Length: 555
Image 1: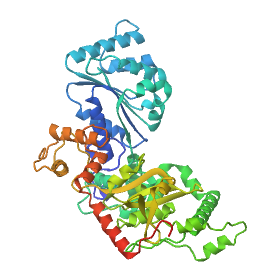
Image 2 (image 1 turned 60 degrees about the vertical axis):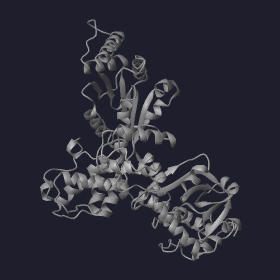
Image 3 (image 1 turned 180 degrees about the vertical axis):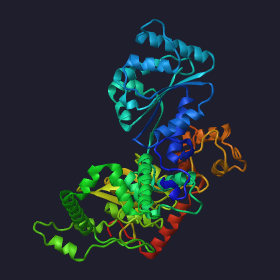
Image 4 (image 1 turned 90 degrees about the vertical axis):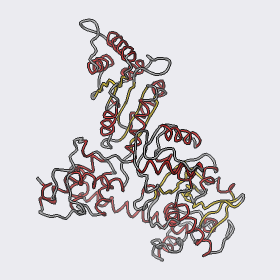
């Protein structure tokens, strides 16, 4: 087959679940940690959701491998059953024999209750895992909920893991299922891979399959294109990469390029995509869409004036000088609003993202959301929706604000800090503007974006039982934040470190699960003063302030 042609021992992109090819992204580690915490938190329901192909089965496999020997497990893979049939399937998995020749719902339920009590008396846990749980009927969900009524004074006797697609979470929010929803002790939605994780995932599978050290099959532009085509979903990544390697082998070519990716996408995603891209009508509609987008962009640029980025950053793409005049001369064109031209800190979405990223030395021209772009180069992006200004002020770092002007157009503001009772924002002219918080609050939608830098020596989620240099790095962060010389641990994530994580999470208003995930690590990095990106942004801000005079809000 093709794999030997590329110097591989085996096909690296099979969609079958193979433990040897296990790749755990930070999101996968977070999900696994939440599930393990849920099982140890006293019982009840644990919920894992994610789009098709995001790796839910991989998480389940990892979870099963980490269950203790004192746990009995029942797995239901086909939940499209009535309540009695579902109980019968659970009893079969646990080797429970109800009384009677033709047992009914009550017989199965009573037998399962007796088993749970006996198992608990023997010091054993009972875990029920239901895959594709979005197919469970209302009666089946209600029957499962009733099973969790059996409990001791300390814990439930049955731990239930529900795994399914995102519509499962939506379904559980229905009023008639509120009792079940309230019993979920841990929940996690598995997100697709990021561009960097997609590249790492592909390289990982190639290395496991025997790719010689130092050899790269997929160039970086192709890796980015694979991420866009696959939306970061591992199963799609496997299918695309497999078809690309097979196509290159068929052409007797060692080069993997965009043409092979487009051919693979047509094959993997079906004939509908291929026919649609060949259709003259689709091409015409695509051209019309681009024309409408270009006109909308031109109108926005005319209204907002030209953007001059901070010194040392690439210039923004400017429209033709004739564009504003052409639009202004069009029949029925309205005159630009002088007030908006004066408020040059009120930016269009693209301008705002570009100016915000330029504070960190990044060029992300054309992006409308800083968290959806490639090339953050060691930085991570987080979007939040705080209810007050305090969390933003406490961050003491630049922030990108989502604003809405008086005419309900989407705007952005680059928040640099505060000066007494006014906010300091960056303008498109490369200067700073002071805007009263009262005025800014009437325009702020509540959404805000921050960039932060993950410590290079902590690149995974850490939980009880983990060990390695990254655990030591986490202990050093806590020591620095606490002003202590001694460390809670050396290289093992022990009970003392877990307890410190829980206390820190409680102090930060985070879920106190004892797991050092992304949100907890971010808060710890800020408290310990270890976010190098913050100081880099401050230095660029100082250069910006020296390069241009500071003006008032109306200047």
